[in-house]
Amino acid sequence: MIDIPAHPTFTKIEPLNKGWSNDKKYYIETVGGERLLLRVADIAEYERKRAEYGMLQQMVKLGVPASHPVDFGVCGGGKSVYQLLTWVDNSYLSSF
Image (cartoon, rainbow, N blue to C red):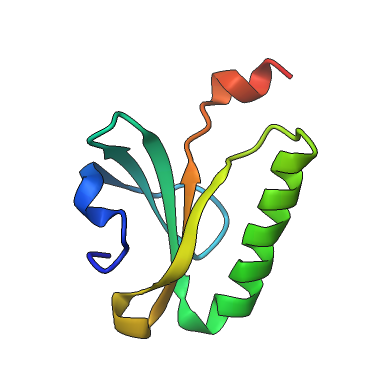
């Protein structure tokens, strides 16, 4: 995780054990007060995760309430792929 470019800005990293995917998920807070979701998957999932990230970008353009893509890349010494997304509270989603 330390090879994620934004890692030096992380002030809080909490593992999350929710969801249906096999991704490792983390709640992140940054020095700038941003709240983010970090998803990390095996590098074998690279193409699928890249497509997923692209779909999120399209959803944001269409105004669909969802996490906004922040960053995507390879980490873990080339063994993992990550997606860094904005954090969405349940209260935000329930307003739609």
